[in-house]
Length: 101
Length: 231
Picture 1 (tube, rainbow over the protein chains, first blue to last red):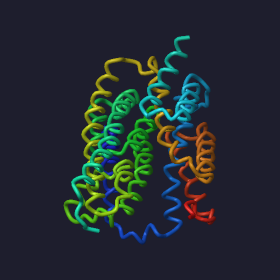
Picture 2 (picture 1 turned 60 degrees about the horizontal axis):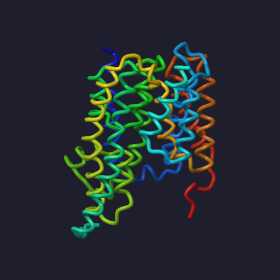
Picture 3 (picture 1 turned 90 degrees about the vertical axis):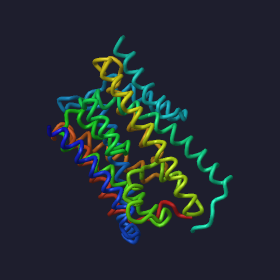
């Protein structure tokens, strides 16, 4: 139940954040501090998500396993300018193959 | 900003926007698959794509749940990532120049790609064509492909067998990659990852990511250096 509330609540919240942007007077963003923080938040969050997703296990311990190898493969694919879908499913394939070994 | 758009110019914008829209919308299949692998059901996965409709936030909510985090920390992370759409809105508002219901409806399509395909246009009509074509193409495809991915993901059983748990990290990295162009952004990325990992053993799942957002706040407030996009 709380999962449904989180899904719908965060969904509506994300919509309101979009609407707020189209409705707020642009001078708010001209504050340099606001602009800098707004620019850096996605970078910090996405990077933290990558790190936690790849090296934390479900008991909140840090482990290096097939997921780390898959992330390495993703880095190589991104350096080779592979498209998003190739990166996502390619790294899944690497992890799946390593677990077969 | 209201000069007429020639038919030729319009079709060029539509063509470019369709290309970006189709490429982006297709990866809804990866969200669908990752989301059911994270413990959301098919209906919740589809509601996320319909209602939230902003990829990074959707992946974040699923990712936090997959790591054992609570729905609340998942929702908070999704909302924090959603703040960048507010930033896009501030940039797009004068260009799209919508009021009333058009603004209320158009806001739902305000995402990375629709902004990218509209923000550089020379006039309001050109910006609207780019924004709406990209936004609608992605909305329709993203939702259809989410359903496909979720149903397929549910059918194949344990996602770990197919490495789908590892695909989440790769998806986040691919979303982050284009933002790593400046030294400041790379520094923030490394610091945020380090802070999050440092917090993992001491906090509940999902919380480390929220703590890492503090890095963005600190660096943004403390570093009053020259602007990154200096001429």
